[in-house]
Length: 157
Image (tube, rainbow, N blue to C red; front, side, top):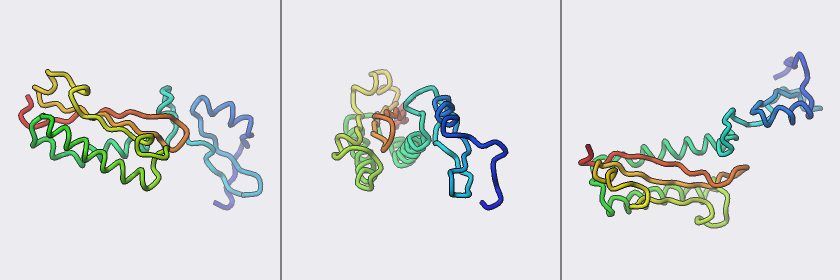
């Protein structure tokens, strides 16, 4: 954007002081003649959600998995269904892993999927609630992030 400048320049020191507060400053890097957003932080106090790319990845996974698992509504909450859910989630995450979406040199380091008796109570199973835990290692700068998806299976109350 030519002809655009900041009324008050923000120094590197200012940006460093504001970053821990979740403030993404506008800066004019020397020699570029451009105004850029310096940082990609959220206002979340939760360290897992401090960075925009991590939050965006989590939202993408959550929405994509929920959409891809719509068929669960027509299945009973049984071990066979849980296994099919695990396979579907693993297949989706494996594709993203192969595209370089996660940290880790192996799939085991990059993501985890769990959908079994350990992720839901007997009452939830009886009510047709299926809980899937999906953990992923974002590229930078956070560690493993865990998502909990709650689906409604057939026959649930």
